[in-house]
Image (tube, rainbow, N blue to C red; front, side):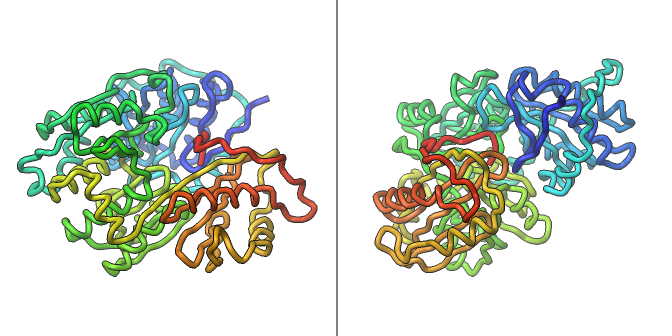
Length: 485
């Protein structure tokens, strides 16, 4: 029996050789071939993972065999570079074989649509419906020859979006970390073109990613922290396995969570580049960006988790900056896609513009807008939440009047249940859409209070409406990311 194939917040991902097989890749490609208009133009790329180029060749062959005009990458590409290639070629659809930040055992199938953003849920739902249980055979004769490499033009595009007055004498030292993904190659090209001071690490291809997940979060950035301290750099910048997310380390070797990076980026754009527009963030991001947006009279919108929801707003109007808690940031007035390299360059530009190390800029931001101490825990459950509205209504009706000494001020149900307290601290419980997990998030000015909020979240994970079987006692996965958000 064919394995079920479901798309998460950004593509389908599965363990290589168990569910992510050549047969299943061809099934997805065949469904995509049916979903797009006849004789469409498609671009297909791949990352550094095991067999990615071979999976891409199979997907390209199926699309070509269905009568579509297909261009296949001649070298590994990042997801933002594939989206750039789609825009430049005016293609109808793009495919990149990547599992992004997931562990080395995984691979994935991302679908991109004009003007270079993730396919919306209605489109991926259509792909699931069109999935044929029978295997589509591989015809070697239909596989197109590799024909494009967007690297040079993509890097030139990134550099053209920088403000040259801040880059005349780039004195700040930076360490750039490719985390063994395609982004490392682009960092090398950027360093050479900009004559940057600093160093590069983990830029080569390693399908095992040095034994860790290629996710730019605190637990996987020890190599970057050490390199920053050893070289006395002003900051360190890491991109994930397909370079659409950014991780940041300051000059003291401390990891900055997205709840500090996103507002720092926003500050630079409005303060130094005098840019305006809407600010869009997912519900799991925090209050510093809200305060900055309010001061500068910018509209701020909260959306469900997944950058595709941010991209929806970008496509509808002028969005200055969009972001998500997983480290994906996109400058909407430049492109409708998150981009770790562009975000990293803009953060470096902020350091250059101010002439201060990143730790000082963070301190100045928190002195003006407040401190941010954020935590996240994922709790496994026996079964996913069934009726999400019924669950959220039940949870809200059983909330205590106070959390960690502060009264409840407001609740929002954009994606899960987000509980705001009188002192503007908040707690979010959000059931996963694809796995039996409850994701919990909290932010406050004080780490002890944030920890207290997370303890309350653990108590509430087991709260279920009547006639729904409760999950077993929850145990956190301690900041562990899973294959889909």
